[in-house]
Image (cartoon, rainbow, N blue to C red; front, side, top):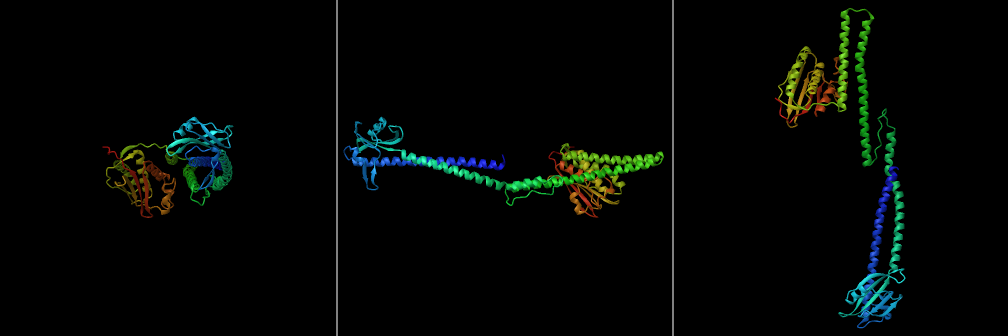
Length: 469
């Protein structure tokens, strides 16, 4: 069953229940009003009979019509009966034979209390509304009168009303069902358009988007949500395509070098020293491929949330000092000046091994793109207001073009001018820096100017625990 038909059925069922409830309420209200009018008529007739009786017991046959100054002649009812104070009947008038007199009603009337009840006719085919009331002369009860009126006219009116309500409700439900089905189709038409557009979107072409309804309603938000999801998928597929192309290129380069050196070595006999040189070069290329594969596996585990980090207090100042001290010889060999500003004692919760890897990647990145004679400055500071520790690595290298900064942390991305492949490396170092910072709840920012240098700043949440001794 389609949603259009389901909506129509739900709407029609709810409407049927409401209409039935309203119809029942109207019928009950009219029945109550008719019953009240009958009882008021009986009370009016009783007063008129009591006024006509005077001091004696009236003859019922003379009470068929009583003139009323307000409304003219009034028919007293279909049945009138008079009793004396001993409860003996004194006369009966009307269209019907004598009705049974309820003893309780007669006893109450002799005590001065009127009684109104519904009794069945002698043949049992209709109901009679019967008033048993005292005849009063001043404060003295002189007799009892009974006045009966058939409820058939009121019941016929109620039956006609019930028929009219039933037919009207049925017609209204038919119109509502047809109209609801049409309105549901109009309301769901944007969904049909979205389904048609969605069926034409595939992984080979994610540039298409779902049409958005002109009104800012739930369907418009649904289309916007799906379009945003498709945009994210398109971006993810584009990154995946770039990643696959870059990874294949990065791995093909050392394989090509290996093949070329092996072919060259096999072309002519070589001395042992020459073979050792070829094998040493091959080992370097194999190490490079192994590094790329290890980093790719690490990134894949980080992307899937499978990279488990230790959550221990780490003295960040000690980690920075030890890493800079170990790396200083490499900086000197490259003709660079490495400066560490005195760090304050700071503690973060994290994985010491991964944080050390983060800092080493930043230092290696600065070394590769800073010419000899340049300077690399490492700083560690605390932002107490933001409750973060900030590690910055600043170089005086070639800098990064502004249009390359947004993609700087993409795998294998290198800016054309500032990140040439000739400088070496796998192209995954900064990507790992970003992933490690994210996993620690931190962030990485870049400030760079071409020809003047670059500063990377890593922000990490400070720990609440005291610093380990």
